[in-house]
Image 1: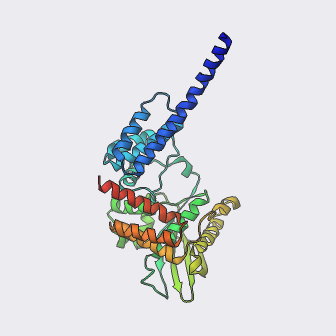
Image 2: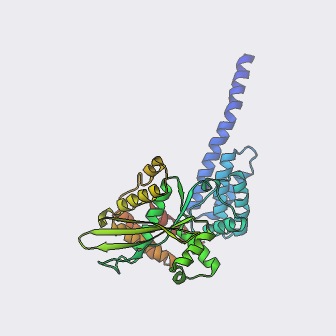
Image 3: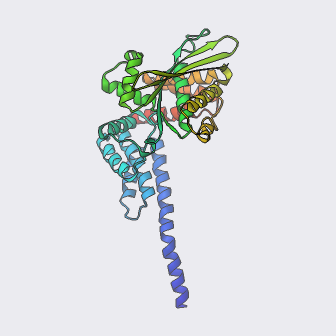
Length: 335
């Protein structure tokens, strides 16, 4: 009987850490849900309480601090958010956040923290860094109607390049943040030298500039060129042409050519564009309009544009990310 009791007790003791992990996972999920609902104060309270537990695992601590730092920033507690970010990067040197996905209050805290501490995520250090900036409009047809599409082409290329796993590409938001810090205007950024100046600040080794052409009969062309940031010398020119209804496929094909130029391994090139929906010009145009509205602070119009982009192309992940971000921005404003 005693042997049976000891065996049962031992099994219970072995199960306790697993139960604790399951409980922590459930609470972390609850914290993330509170954050997404815009209940930032509640998320801060829950996360702080969870971190106070002595048995919390390292992986659970990392997840909890990520959500806590984000919730603090959204709760207008930027200094506390930065303090937790400092703790987070010590525990996880690979910590990173995508400025295209994060709402403004948090991404500004993250960019400021990274700039002041000179922190570079470990996983970026062995990657090629390629900045992609908004493409110019050289269209022959409906030029005014597609005037913002250069934003979307740059976003798709960035997304495709990063999906290879071999490239880090700074977000548009990071550019805009540095613009503010350097007291440069969007007009000044139109100058190539100013773009390269910003690129040096954010650690981009290479730039991709380009022009797009919307043409009659559903034809579409993208010209792109690679420029080395340090020397400002053009290194390679690319041209790709196809159907406007296949613009997502065009950006993937262009990405693969660019990766091949940089001698990226074939396996990584294969990953670029994998599982990425074939977005058409109409969807990309709505997405680009949404970004332009966001940057003017017209969040309702931005949300409508993203919704239209998703309606046209239901698997458009970039538009879904932006739509969620705008919703968080609005919940923060309504606190």
